[in-house]
Length: 146
Image: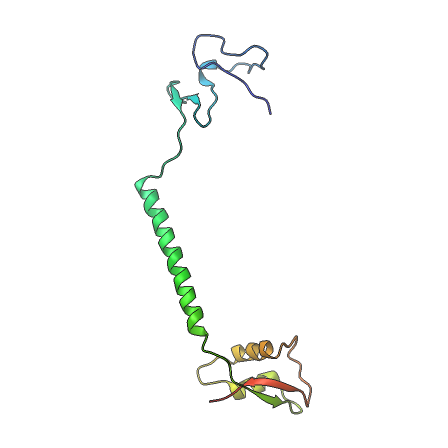
């Protein structure tokens, strides 16, 4: 990357000795702009000090709204997680019979209004199963009814 030093005063050559010259560019429209450094205004050519960006009232309201919404989501998620923790799960040992499937076993222990698919997933997690295949005589844990 090459840099060009240009005088902010119009009238002179504007280029420092030993620096590359931009061909065809008007020196009064060029200037270095950075934190605390003077630059040239694009429209009038007047020197302008660069400033930090400031939020407008609308921008501040948007930031506050995003912060409040984020806080609300975090609080609601924490409350939902606390409500889901109803204490230890009571379980029973079930011995798999010939022809039993995980779906059939889950349908026996599913409470009214509960989705059987959720119960199948819970059985897989509870028994640390890598597949839903069962063998006759295998003992698995199932949620206790009542």
